[in-house]
Image 1 (cartoon, one colour):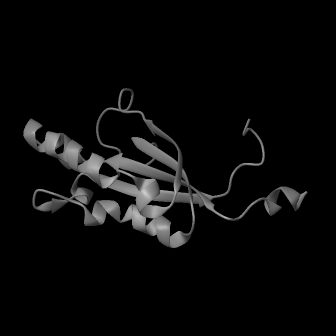
Image 2 (spheres, rainbow, N blue to C red):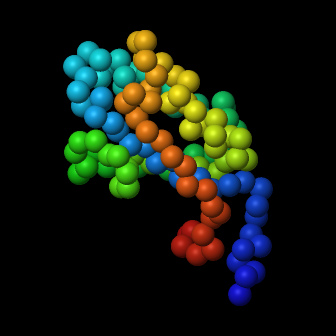
Length: 123
């Protein structure tokens, strides 16, 4: 029964879950525009910078309106990541990246779910 657990362990399957905080919605249009630009820059070239492989992304902002302080989150990035340190580094993007004189964590929250690829449904 446990043979499905013996699959390739060369990477960690990670679901990065991103929530949008109240500050995003409280921001004036110019501040939100700067935030969108900073966010694109912060999450650009994840493969080149961190060595991970993005498998997919999802944004449900058309049907989830307002802040997301817990599940369900607003946006997701599914990736194969080489190790735990890389997961932590990607999560730290919002801690390290600024927009104006504040960090992105004023506007977003992020958490990571770690696991492995599912043994079915991959075709």
